[in-house]
Amino acid sequence: MRRFISSISAYARKNRPGFTVLTLNGLDLLTKTLAGDETKRYPARAYIRSVDGVIQESTFFGVPTVGSPSIEERKTPLLRHLDTAKANRLPVLAIEYAKTPKMINDAIRLTKQKGFIPFISPARPLSDLPTYPRRPINENPKSVISLSEIKNFLYLPESTGFGREDEYALALHGTNYDMLIVDVFHGRTLLSKRAVETMKYKKIGAKRLVLARLNIGTAEAYRYYWKPGWREGSPPWIGPNYPTYPDRYYVQFWKPEWQALISGDARSYMFGIMQQGYDGVLLDGIETYRYYEGTAESVEATR
Image 1 (cartoon, rainbow, N blue to C red):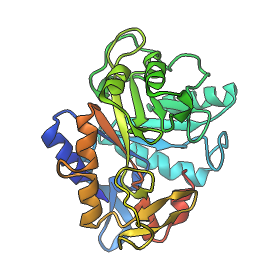
Image 2 (image 1 turned 120 degrees about the vertical axis):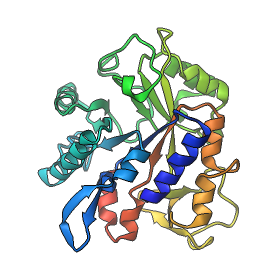
Image 3 (image 1 turned 90 degrees about the vertical axis):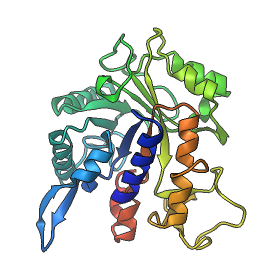
């Protein structure tokens, strides 16, 4: 998975210098174990240099349900990995899942204490704009052209509740977040360049970043690349259903056929994302390697 992510990053940077690559979860990729002694870990420096930042879900709130405080057995290793990210100068963004104003305020306080940039979501997956706090955390009137400048962000993986594409784009344009992370599709229709460009401006007129979410660890039967007749085992690199999503399948992500579909040339998903005008990409589904290592429970615990 490290090599796969690094290859995606190299392709993006070759074609779009300054293109931002973030990862969602999968923090143990930041370190490697010492050969012969798995108690000793050291930074995976080549991999760390290939990404621009990390996003971690539910460090403090949100497992197993929205608003649930994280247990120490989960929180402690996550914070250790996040310390590794910060020690290697990777920006850390945090998505916490909380509903009540008190829990939301607690989540903001805890993430800020660790030096993370927080986004608090009242639902998983989020399909509407949050109503509390009413304005972005650390609202920023300035234009933002790089990840190092952001003070807040919005993660919105579902958009079908917004109506037409233009209504969706204008709703997000009417916010002042420094960075938006959205799905490439609005429902099952590709977001247009015009919609992406509309989203690139805050309500106050300043510029911001817009990133596309790309799942590189599971194949989704409603995506453009899915062909009639595809199913588990056909092609051979398509694995079983993802437990919580019947139209999503684990993939053998190391197979050249899947990697070529995701990145590498003008026929790939990444090329399309860059052509649509996005400023970067959030790589989702990277914890699929845990399924193939026999620790699928670890994946489900974070979703």
